[in-house]
Length: 543
Image (cartoon, rainbow, N blue to C red; front, side):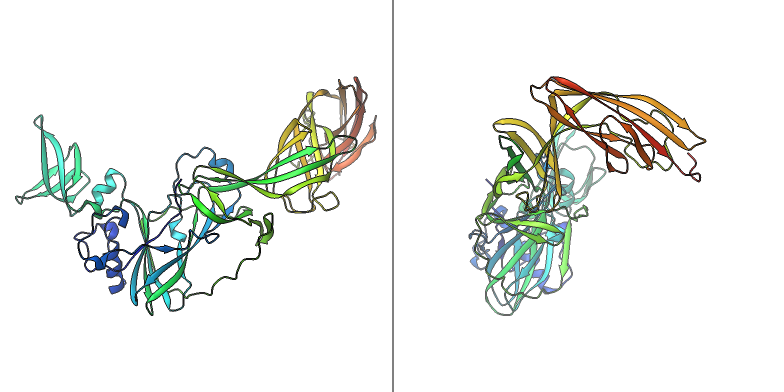
């Protein structure tokens, strides 16, 4: 698997490289930047040619603390989990959102030091990356992002001013010209060795002759760090990145016997498509979706100004056996007690809370004829606004309250709920972020042995009296060997002032535009529900 990011730190080199392409031009912050550019010119240290005999300019190996247990902190936000399913390659701006915090340690000399992090994850938001010192007397003076050179056009643009070889066909024969590349665009303009300038509009191949390693093959972040004295210094590298997301995964198992109780198990599914794996990370899962501005990353970023050192963080509390739920601003976070490995391209399943086997619930057969779905500004007089008619499915639902009397009472993050009746799969439903005390309604699927048919039987409009009446008949059949009760929710969309004037069963007002009936259906029998509703509107309302 991919290893966690490991920084490369190097002191300023003794002399600048022979050539710096435009993307690597030194920013204007004085002598410190010159040392930084000298240290960071060319490819990252892992891609450079062999160093010269002068050992004083070699990069020192990093003393990263990221490999220590629990030091790398990763906060992953919910949302975008499904969007990551079809992602094959990591890229900037990809779905998912996470915050990475990794401690680093390096031996610094007094004065200016050059630090580098390379390669960077392709999904990293480099504009928001920060390196913060935790040692007094150490400040970050400048930060710079260098984009990797990729693609033919970028390579050619980066090679302007360098010696190249261009192969082309002239008069049916292959020919190679070499010289300094002056311009690209309408062909390639070369300054040949004999002093001539030649434009080659049609060419077959292009190659760099000298100092090929000077073009950055991987993206990097580079810093100039000022130290008041020599010695070890601690830093925290923080950055957001895409390609990481999570959602909850629940299993609800209904208990046998009379009444309705269920056992609820909760786990987190964490997907990593970021292009980078994480070993033994301290993981926090945040239930909530903060607003984010998705912008275009710049090729080169420079920030200046020293950062103040900050005190060491307090020691973590003893780890609980399950993730510790806590408020996190406007969201809820779940801190995992043990370090977790997140492999690139993989999905980890992590328990969120222990199994709760005594959640009080209600099992419902439901019939709902959808209405118009909006609030009419005036009464709807067209007789076709009567909701669905004809054959309708009867749905299986399970409802319960997320409170302590019911056996829960904790924030439940959004995710999928799979329901079982013993070993039999009943169906699955989507659970949104649910605070403590909220009602949960799980729609599991269509009931095979229950069917229904709905018809509009009468409609009468009295414009003078400013009323209209409408009648319906709903027939429900039960092929089960046991009786069943179906909760029928009827849409009343025409106007907000309505009254059930007659019905074969008692009606209950559910809300401003719906009435509800409890219809008992005998085993292997049928029941017909009939009702009439009357709408009224005042004189100043003109339909």
